[in-house]
Image (cartoon, rainbow, N blue to C red; front, side, top):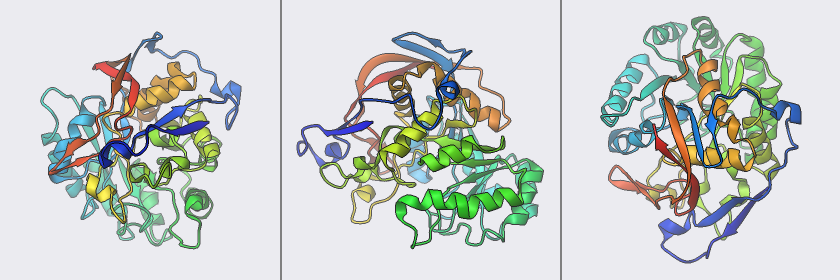
Length: 393
């Protein structure tokens, strides 16, 4: 289970105390959503020892980079570790056309540090008005996917889909063109309990989509529940899920330890311990349809520490160290490469990266904040010690 223990609560500045908790994985059961046979693993090509791990360079299959000065601040954190990343289109205004996506891509490329070999994979924002013709144009322009946000579900999602029946012809065009559908899997009905929105989405929205467009490749992004983990695991080969470090490592107690913790607030929201355990089990299982997607989502510190704080956790600078920590504590470090580096490109029908990265067992302290445009952003695990770090790419 996750034990969330305060570390001298009340000491230090506000920017330090928000993540000044020792989130410790004290016990990880080998039982859970997946059987021992499903969790067994053979044939991973990673070079591993108790203090060093060399794997194929990972990709991030769910990333927010924002725009403007903030984009320039955060792109290097991803580019220094990952070979590729799927870029989310929920800017203001949203990236609804392939032309907008290609223009955005150029701004990202301009922010990449000189020596980094990083490729942004672009997506478009699905709306009620997206036409099949736009889908085919996006395919020709190299767009890899459309993102489905239920209107009002998360940050900058108010231009999202309001009528799921309306977009069925567009989804059929996506299946025909070979584009993926990336789903933020939550309903927005105010009568549904906030912690049940993912479970209800599967029944009310996702299953009907899959029945009407059975050949469409779908990624249920940033899954948070046992319900989603089991649904994907038992689903068809064209259904997959991305998994974040926060949903593997934290349960909802992290939101309320010693007071309200805005830097632990994300959407979908953290869930009960049984759900965290199920998500961890999914990531470390042999199922090839679970893979890395950080959902790293930077917001200025003052907008997180506000009366109505923004949803999102910024994990890009520490994500690989956090994943390594989670896999090690689960006794599954030799399975990290498949989750981080192999399954994602396989599902997207893209080549695996040829480069390698090396993680070294060495304690380091996560900085309390990073530059973000004209302000700062507080990263996940700020001020805490991590035992893995990337030493070479």
